[in-house]
Length: 259
Ligand code: ADP
Ligand code: MG
Image 1 (tube, rainbow, N blue to C red):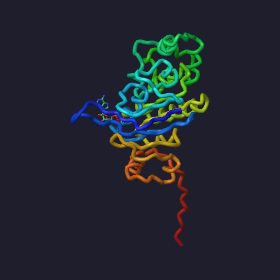
Image 2 (cartoon, helix red, strand yellow; image 1 turned 45 degrees about the vertical axis):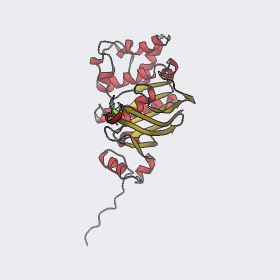
Image 3 (cartoon, helix red, strand yellow; image 1 turned 90 degrees about the vertical axis):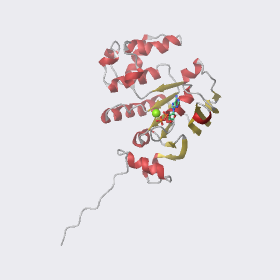
């Protein structure tokens, strides 16, 4: 579904140039959730933004569903690929109702449909009563549900998720991750999930790349990491940093009674 080939993104030029992404390459199968993990500033967001046309591609090629993307991306691209951002407070227009937020993509693509708005609310676990609310009348988790509903409204095949739960409390974070996992399975979606938190990526993705300073350090799997098979030192440090990283429960032998 996605084929990223030697993607490079350079901001500025000459001595002041910043190589934000260097030779990023991976393939994502249809229906797969693929993770990109790395500390802040490692180039994760820039890589994702370059795929969807929000950052310039300096060199390299991006294929979606077998077709190379064009610059600028065309309407068909945004019917196939949608993005969800970290901060649901910034990504929703404060003076637009949920109804308007969800109707706009339909209108732009000439597909106005009231039933579709209600269906989208239902898909993200919100009742029809949310339809005429404003963002300030929603919790952080509810806002992110609306941002996800907006991304899904045109029935895309691919979601690019940039730290979709990083602005949320831990319990809400788990709810949103479970919702995303459920939606992927029900709708057959393909994801790229970017996060600085290995636990978040491991929750949703089987395969993943670890990035540092714009480069891929290693491609690995959640299973390999759970089994303690991180070959790279940097990946090991991310595992340590990620406190919630789920391991197989350790079975402790009962303490022996002193004789
Ligand atoms: P991450 O998402 O992993 O935290 P980013 O992709 O946001 O990392 O940033 C990677 C690098 O690119 C950083 O050094 C950042 O300062 C730089 N960068 C990102 N966007 C721009 C931009 N628009 N102009 C110049 N440099 C940028
Ligand atoms: Mg980022």
